[in-house]
Image (cartoon, rainbow, N blue to C red; front, side):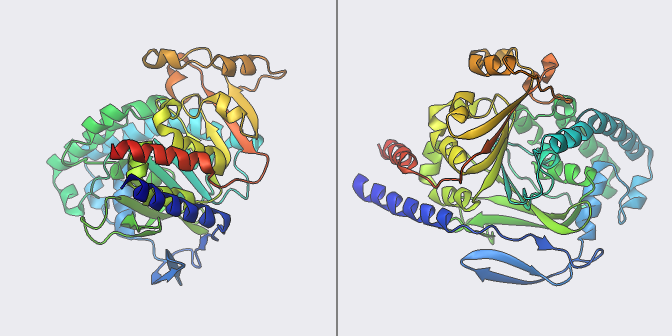
Length: 421
């Protein structure tokens, strides 16, 4: 029985390698009208769900909900924004956001341009494991990506019903809970998983979708569509038609960029990325592989990629990322150094927070300190922002990206054997 299951996985992984070798980066979906966008047809090409557009219509109701959540004037909910509770909320958000914009977002835009971190050709997928709902910084560092694939453990939640906003009691509670859920990221740019699980236990603020819409609206994006998604057995994305259809449950938000020049998409999956769970859900491994030559971004990731039980994901990132941008909580610096990347180090690094005091990387500090010219960061995000320091490792692949090799197959086999036992 074990042999049969392992044989099936080997066949599937052979298919993964084939798909990676034959990966062709898809062109962005271009908006043909500045004001209207309409989905006119859905077609299947090579088993992948592709949306064709003639004219595109901004979903005014979804965009209005996102704006309402974000404290921005909403075209269809304007009358509900004309009260003292909402005006106080807006004033608070505007103050907080001005600080985030001046101290982080503006500085990130300058830094990424000066250091060629985000280049014109960076229009493929940005992969952000252990992200929570942090589309803000993924988009800040890589604004031109066609697709953002974000994975966390927090549940998706439900889009607020517009009629509920007419209830002043609901609005007060909802906005208060929303502000509370943003308390850490507004200060130091990251979410705390255990606190999010508590925050999103609220029946109104019930998952990451609220925060995702907040950030998209605050960064001047318009919502085109929101849909539940899953994957088929080969890792192709498809619209989820029922709750019982698949174990893989996700959400896709399609939105316009600031210039309304193209449609971008954000996929979020609540999914455990450990070796054991990938062995049980190989279709999700196929999906990750189908992203092709990706940019991987990680920060405030609890040093999860330092653990042996996440070896499959670690190897996939190292082998299939054309760029990696991470802080010290991502893949161990020593491993990144030995994978043929050109590495630039930025910022300052003297310690870790107390919860992770055993994860300090002396080689990272030594290499940072031995730079002829120290490259400082003009912004502070992540765990060490509490100590007024941030370190970023920017790794760019020197050679062509490689496909999954036998070590990943071996890792998956070992994980699968452990699961069977």
